[in-house]
Amino acid sequence: MLPQDVRGESLAIGVARGAGGGRAPIVARRPRWRAVLVTARPKQWIKNALVVAAAGAAGALGHDDVPVRVGLACVAFCLLASGIYAINDVRDAPEDRLHPRKRFRPVAAGELDPRVATLLGVALVSAGIVLSAAVRPLLGVVAVGYVVLTVSYTVALRRIAILDIAAIAGGFVLRAVAGGVAAPVTLSRWFVLVVTSAAVLVAAAKRQAELRRTEQAGTGGRSVLERYGAARLRLIIAGSAAVALFAYGVWAFAVPDVDGTPWRPLTVIPFAACLARYGMLIRSGSGEAPEELLLRDRWLALCAVVWLVVFALGVHAAG
Image 1 (cartoon, helix red, strand yellow):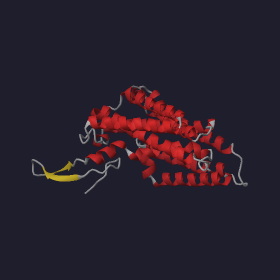
Image 2 (cartoon, one colour; image 1 turned 45 degrees about the vertical axis):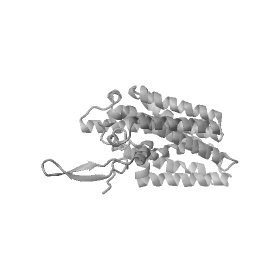
Image 3 (tube, rainbow, N blue to C red; image 1 turned 180 degrees about the horizontal axis):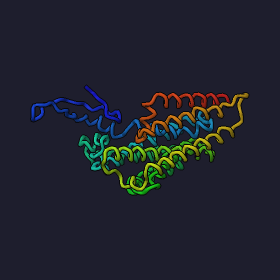
Image 4 (cartoon, one colour; image 1 turned 135 degrees about the vertical axis):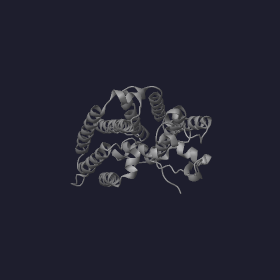
């Protein structure tokens, strides 16, 4: 059969006789192509929807060749992210082997040679930067900045309290900035504040989930977790959620109504519902993989779809 690990990566399981006559599961090696695909982490590409967000928020996706430029920028950041994941997996393999989920990553599991993963990572990052620069030179600069930030996080920042959360949030913000540069459109200060505060919320929730997992397992986690604590992380999460909702409300009500229908203000309702549902989920310690929450929780996904539909109606009415 083909059970799923918590990341949704299929692992072929066989059954063999143990030394004492029992039956023990054996994890079959994935073929090379699948190991490469899993290392690229396509599920994580959902985060790059933020590249489209800036142009969508400005209602520019239907203008000229904006969809093509934004689409290429999104592809470029998918390449960048996958390349960095591959390089990080090589560096983090010893630590990943001790993690209940990450031990199934191809490099940590011995299914993908570290040299192959490194070459894959360098090739994908290089392709992402070249593609970004081809869309717009300034976008190439943003892409390089994204790579520098994420590599800095892996090498040093993830071990420094607060800066680790800031670095994770910065990666989300740079995705949104990339979309604005690719379009190009001017990003509203309130829009940037919404993205920044929501990103801080997601990053703090990841740390909260890691802390909860290590406390329940009774094992040591990242050293940076010792500098936080449940109360401090809850404060960061609550504060960032409040800022995100306030900034979104200001941004939504700043746009004039179209045809007498307050489409943009109406999006505050599903946006607040998304925040509330996400907050409920992360209180149970489910925030370590935010992209999986959106894909797995039907109510969170429903709130997101309702928000998107109402927002799209507003953009269509304005056009």
